[in-house]
Image (cartoon, rainbow, N blue to C red; front, top):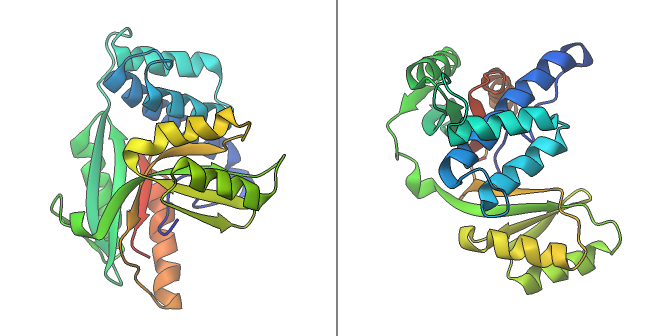
Length: 238
């Protein structure tokens, strides 16, 4: 997938492992809370919640944390601030268009933190919906073929209705229409294909090239944003 995301992005040194683990748990818990708030606390009837729980388990989040996040979303936990999903847009140096997806209990704090990082990097925040024409939301499924050949799994995905497929090393990326993500994921699972992860993402409709120096500076910007607990995903048009 073009662009960057929290899940696929920045690796930290071993010395920061514990802090990073807590950072990831915070981010994933908020995903679970948002999903439960939107569609209820039963993953059997709430596909978005099922995806969020899968994501939580993929980073070894304890069940007690997952259950607490669900209860926060359904309102069973009192005296906790509501979590909202907000997408901020920014223009980074090099004319890189950024969508910064957040899960926050304080929009003013989150905006100020992001703006501070963006502006210190030489970029600027832009009004909401400025980059609508540059991105498309799609479903994405990641698969590491295990019991079948890569080409067999790819053909199964295409037969199930995938829009596009590509390989990132040994990992197969399957792109779907938003409305088809659940159907295609369940179709593949029914055929015994193990899914690494799945969700909704934004992909650029066209890609931008940047020079090496700009890329180094941009990676530093991504790392600073990724350290914010409120930031969930970052998409760009690289």
